[in-house]
Length: 459
Image (spheres, rainbow, N blue to C red):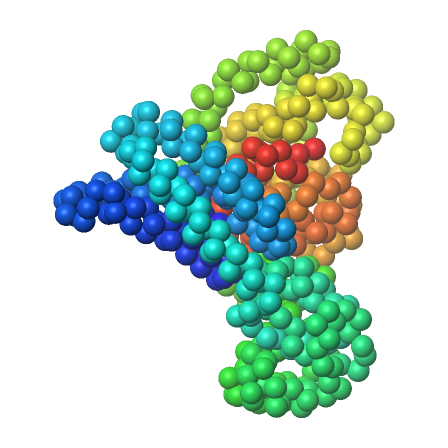
């Protein structure tokens, strides 16, 4: 991930990306030295450093946008390396454009291709070694789950579902068979069964993953804490592992005493300044797209160009969201319904603008008005909000911040239109609100660009 924020990405992913970038940087500079000699190289070191940085940045952006830094599931290595070559091909095209406009950054043909071959070989070895490390679960933190019920199974699924999670389940404590135990970890009836494994550092963390926390032997857990073993509540561990809150397990005390869920005046001011500045520039730049889209909508079907709909915003205040109309004008003659992936109410051109997210552009007006922000929970319709807040705990918390054009839930969870999907998205929304920061906003925007370019999650 290009935004190196340990808060949102595991340390091993950060080291992988940073290590690969440094590797490419030093290889390119080594090729420079071999080609022109150390004496000439030392005379203009800053220029050669800049040229190498540009190459590293372009190649890593291409790798990122082709999902080649997402190693939560290990692909076939041969297919993976073909995608790496494809990313390098895109990188060469982008560099050619950069060199045309900024000739001083140009690397001579011989040096460039020699460097590319060297970089390709080293990236191959780097990624091959990393894949081996992930497959063998090397350098992972062994954890014990105090619990064998439904909550424990969710944690096991989260850990085992990500090859690069950085954890492995080393033991369970509980009366029942955990039901999900891919590594055949030992199951102890009593907490004391973990003592020897903890003493030998075969366990470094204990996660309280009980379905019912009543009767938890806190005094015994304190002994493990004094031994140097980290003891974590399952909600906190799950949050760090998945980037979402376990809504059904969240205790009101977590919301009350947490450091998150608060946005200071300065942060609100900076966020608002960025929203107004970027929205204004984007509106000006997208005027040709606005005009073309308006003409095509009027040409394809009768009705207004813009679609206005009531949505619930910050503090529960209702506002009208503005979008390009992508459905027939009589789409809701029978009342409001959840949109679906293959909705027959969507027009042909409407399906296209939904795929490339052009239908969202008019929401820039909502951003300038102050009704929305660039990043935040997606605003929902009042009728659905009334329905969802009855069945989903803490649903109204998502209204403590302004809704957004894009959001953490939108990039982390595929498009859905049901109460179950609303619950799953709320888990990500609460994580965003709890950890609200400029860094998380930038990361969300950066990943949104990838989603738009590759048409992921469109509906």
